Every structure is written in structure tokens, then in C-alpha cells.
Image (cartoon, rainbow, N blue to C red; front, side, top):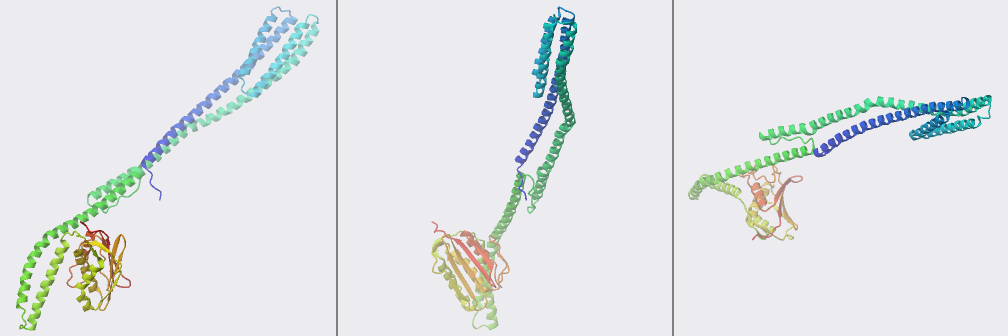
Length: 485
């Protein structure tokens, strides 16, 4: 599963996408305008060169006409006109060199220049030799040498340059046609990209923001109505995923707080009610027990004495029940003193020795020699161990075995009690101080919660597990702490 993307990063990506789209559109438009401008300038350049060579050709023929006028018509103004046309032709050649952009163009212009120089030399020869020549000789030089030789080379160079310019113009026309065909595509491409980016941004907004926000809003409404078990789907942008996680965690915390509050309210109600009930029960019980004990005389019939003993036993059980209930509801605070845990266990086992002997249960001790002194509230620990060991004895079969193991480290001490009984009908939950079901006929179900309460007062915990193949294992884990002042 891919990790959710941050909303800030996604927005940055889309902003960069729009920026790139704008830059791409500008670049495409600029490139198109540049190419069109270059093509236009190239067309103007070629046209200007065509114009220059055409004008140069016309001026050249006019210059040759002035040679003809000077040789055959003895025109005195022909020399001046000849010089004027020569300057124009030189200017045309220079303009062509300045406008030319390729080596082929410069080479063609150079050939035209050389051809023109040949024509000019021949024209000068004709002008110098005209006085001693006959008309026939002049015509021969003029027609054969000048027109056929000089003008032939010039026309050849002129045709080559004209053909080159025509080829360049055709290539330019092809590029312009291609550019004209691409122009609509270059115009539509940014539009398509913009539409695609708009659709993607809308889908992103729906999937990453709008839909997750809607689910968060609905979940918040459901939770506000009391359903704290409802879970917010953790989807969308990273910020909304974190928001959903926070809401789910808040709901879990509120549910736990509500359960804790209910337990506290229940405990408070019991704490207020039980002392009153205990007081109202104990006084009549004391009177009933005292009366039964006074009446219980050895001279009475056996059946009557048995009934009186039952009354005394029942009164004693009710007294123990009220005492356990009051002890369970009373807030506990550990008053620590240095002691050795094996000695505390031995004291409790000594109190339970009659029950152990009656059922023939053998106690196996381990880890007694390696235990050091630790800070414990001896009275509370004895009461807790008395209840746990009594449960283990009652659960054990006749002539069974009860294993007690003490393991101590530098951080904690662990006391394990393992019986061979049939196992517990339920598994106590750590931190649950509510009375549980009892397997004993006259049990109150307060032994395990009271032991948990004592361990909690010492900063420890109790773990229960079913042994293999049968029995129950109880482990008390108590942190080692020095004696408190």
C-alpha cells in the first residue's frame, strides 16, 4: 500500500505543474513566433538578393550599352555614364556580399564578380583599340569577345545564383507550410495539457480532500452521538490521514475514559452503600451469633446443637464476606518496609497449614535461598497471598502438589503459584478490579481483584495462564523499590 502524500507537497506539485504548463506554452508560442520571424526575415533576405541581382543585371546591360555608344556612336557622355553604372554594379555586388548568409551564396556572388571584372576588362580593351579598328573589327570584338565570352560567363554565374536563391526560397516555403500545419497543434497542445491538469486536480481534490473531509465530518457526527466504536477511514492526503488517526485515537481514549468513569462511579456508589449495609448487617449478626453461642449447651439435643452451629458458621461467613468487601473497597496505599518475600510466603502458608494438612497437599518451594530484602507493605502482601494461596488450595485435588517459585532480578521479583486444579472459569484482565465469578461455595469473588489492587498499589501486576495439561499458574511481578520514608 502506497504511503499517503502530504497535502502541501501535492499542492506544490500541482503548482509546479501549472507553472511548467505556462512556461511550456510560452516556450512553444515563443518558438513559433521566432521561427515565423526567422522565416519572414529569410524570405525578405532572399527577395532582396533577387532584387539586387536583377537590378545589377539591368545596370550591367546599360553599362555595356554605353560602351556601344562610345565605340560606334562616338557619344562623348558615354564614359561618364559608364563610370556611374560601374559604381552601381560594385554597390550591388557589395550589397549581395553583405546580405549573403551561406558559403554557396558567397561563392556564386564571387563568380559573378569575376565575370563582371572580365566584362569590364574587355570593355576597356575595346575602348582603347577603337581608334585603329575598322567597323568590322569593332563589331567582331564587341559581339564575339564581349557578349559571348564575358557575358556568357556572367549569365552562367547569374543563373547559378538565381537557381540557388530559388532553391532556398522553395525550401523556405516548405518550412513555412510545415510551420503553418504545426501552428494549430502548438496552439491546442497547451490547451489539452491545461484541461488534463484541471481534470487531474479535480480528481485529486475529490479523492484527497473532499471525500476524506466528508467522511471525517460524518464520523465526528457519529462519535458526538455516543458511538465511540466508529472508526474514521484513514485515507486521503497525509494531513487528513493524521487527522483521522487522531480522531480514532481520541475516540479510543474517550471510550477508555468513559469505562474508567463508569467503574469509578460504580466503585463510588459501592463505597458509599457498602459501609452502611455492613454496619446494618454486622450488628444483627453479632447479636444472632452471641445468642446462638449462649444457647449452644452440651445438654441440648444433637439436632438442635447442629442447627445452632450452622447459625454460628453462617454468621461467621457473613462477617468474613462483609470484611472482604470493605477491604476491597477501601483505598490502598502501600506502607513499605524492608522484608524478604520467602518469609512473607512462609507466614501465609503457616496460617493455611490446617487446610493444607486436611487436603494432603504438598508444597514445593523454589528460589527461597537467593531472595534479597525488598520494600513491601507486608500486611497487604500477606492478605493478597492469603487469598491467592487459598484459591490454589481449594482448586487443588486431594493429595495434589502446589508449586511456589520466587525469581528475583535487579529490577523486579516474580512470585509464581502453580496448582494442579481444573483451571479457572475465566481469565482475569489486568487492571480490571471488578469482582469476578467464584468457584467456591461461599466465595465472594473478591480475592483476585483484591490481589490485583495490592499489586497495583506496589506498581506491579498479576498474570494468569492455564498450565499444561491442567491447573492454573499465577505470577506476581513486583518492582524492587527501597523502603519509603
